[in-house]
Length: 77
Image 1: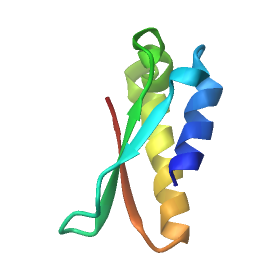
Image 2 (image 1 turned 90 degrees about the vertical axis):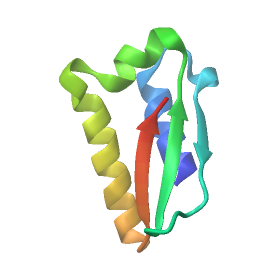
Image 3 (image 1 turned 180 degrees about the vertical axis):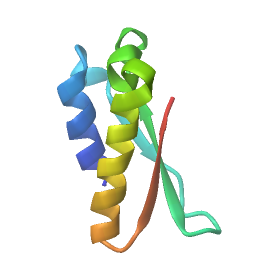
Image 4 (image 1 turned 45 degrees about the vertical axis):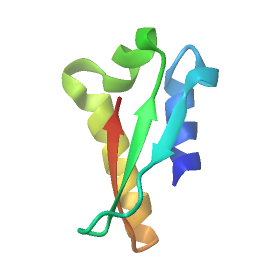
């Protein structure tokens, strides 16, 4: 899952080498939280107008996780 999130975010930003993803252990609800970190000047590109790109990233990640029968949440740090 981390590789998918890295590839999505790297295509959006100007500095793809600064894209980092860390995963928290599965919590008590069975959800794995993925933390996406990008360069400060790329935050707007990842979030988008009114959060539309961030919402789309979360939707794609949930769909991919659902296909593998796991639960994933994405937080943009």
